[in-house]
Length: 337
Image (tube, rainbow, N blue to C red):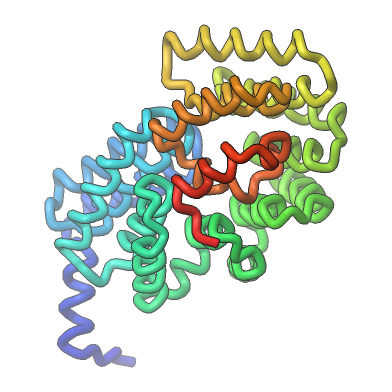
């Protein structure tokens, strides 16, 4: 059978692909390392995507991959958001300059728009455009349901996460994504159950322990949370996020000295690498020390840390939620109602 393509189809495919076999191999290796979601994998991905670009400077997908890798550098606290996210945006914009019908680049810009620029209408425009160009790609991606959850469109986010898992039921990352959506939707029992299903597939997936611990905390199962978050910390050596969550759990148990010890460890860690102010605020929120929590949240606001996009949904901030300073912060971040 011979596939008949229109002139526009041929032009789009020519822009989106590369005739350079080495560039293509480099791109595939970049996506492989990017999907590992580890610090080493993300840095390797950046190197591979850049190699693909060097081999074919017109390779739009390689620029989109580079954008996603820089997004992950911020997402996993490997770089300050103000360093990583502008680089991600530059790469995604370059991809669209080469091919303005590249769904992958629109998804990248959708995430950057709401999680860093705090521009929710711009994000919606990019996600809508990506959905029109390649619905299957958007459906299988984690960024769009996260965006929907940040806006409080919780049922839409859950539906999308479930449909993505239907496409690939064996995917541990998509199982994890569904657990995240249950957590953000405040369906904590379902989040706990889904985390266990994820860990059945991949018992060493550190992020699954993180969400499981947070779901336990939301259910006031604080001792269980400590146990799970200790496992998360063991699987994520040197992770400021795991340390902060463990400090929060100790705080909720009334173990104030343990919680404050984690603050000191975070301070020591910050002398060697980037530690988001958000994490200091989290421990103080657990301790219900509101003044310290809001002082650190203001610093995090200036850093434009990605988790500020989910302030309204994250149950961990319940100790601060009744304070007028919290609603003012949500307003300044611009999270739509």
